[in-house]
Amino acid sequence: MNDRLNVHQICKAAAVTRTQFNQWVARGYFKPEEPPVHGKPRSFSFREAVILAAFAELIRLGVPHDVAAGHSTRLHGFKDEPALLVVYQGPVELIPTSERGSPLPGTRRGIKFYDPDQPQFGSDIVKLSQLASYAANPDVRSMAVVNLDHVEGRVKTALASEATDGE
Image (cartoon, rainbow, N blue to C red; front, side, top):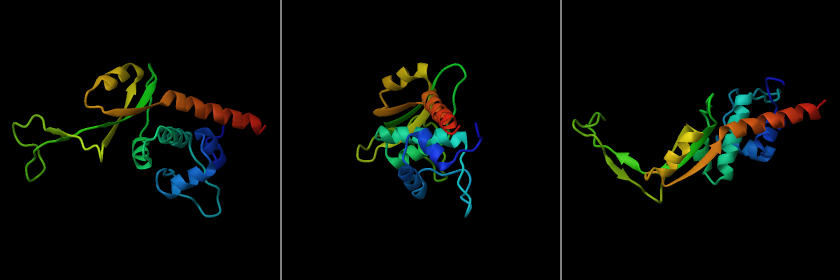
């Protein structure tokens, strides 16, 4: 397999149209590692294909584009268990601070605040065995889960079929 992918290959691997891909790049939701060079076709890494595919999965689940973009960039897996990207909504903890921004002495916990009109998003990459603890957490109002091992597998399958189609 070639170590760099072209636009057609990355779109196929992420199951998105070229139009979607170009719009996401133009709007800054997907930022290629290498800037485009005039007169030279764009190329992408396998890592970028996985990031784009995870981003696309979050969009399909209804996560806003800006939120999906911010939470799908630093991905990793685990050796012993499938990795899940969990994007969730929950309250913000307001902690009293000094003028310099340090927590006040003796302040252990802040006040939790949830604004349903502007929900705060967080994300974690967790092992499959940890998912139940997220679902049981009363601070997690809702969540979208993407299995990163499945995403990586779909990207590999798409690229392998692309390689055999081209022979």
